[in-house]
Image (cartoon, rainbow, N blue to C red):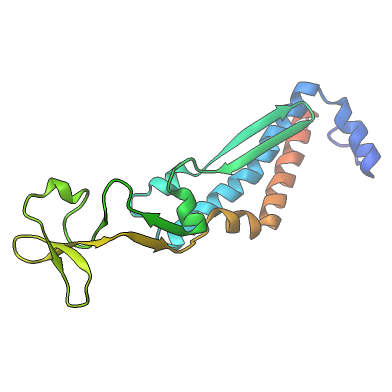
Amino acid sequence: MANDVVIGEEELIAKFRQLNTEVQGEALVNTVGAGLTVIVNAAKTNIKEQGLIQSRTLSRSVHQEITERADDHVEGTAGTDLDYAAIHEFGGTIQAKSSKYLAIPVGNYTGSPRKYGDLKVRKTAGGTLVMVDAEGIVQYVLKQSVEIPARPYMRPAADNNHDKVSDAMARSWKKQIENAAGGA
């Protein structure tokens, strides 16, 4: 079967039906996985190019998953489960929840300003509330809300890579069929 030439859709389907059902499902999983890998890698590249890599947590969280598997049908997804991932993808407004203001670090201090006992609230000449350290250096800007611009990384990974996904899946599919048929 590995050296046979297949002409037409019907002949391809007939050859595929000759394969073991279990092999069919695994071949489909590997083929879908090959396409998803292209999307995951493109998303990670997009994250890096947009500067969303401060801790690399977002990039590391992007993964692929087979969500439905049958002998003749496989579905998968690529994405991330991080709570803040959607705000980067779609943009939006972040509002203070547990206090009146969001404390946005702009100096050397990190994390919650509550862990620093030397901070004082001041108002700038422009009317912006800030928190300054004992030396008067601004460490945090206080805002009731902030607008986060959309910086999509998943949608472009899928939308801009149709050809690469198709090519990866075709190569994988061919390899799976050749391996199942006993060819190399």
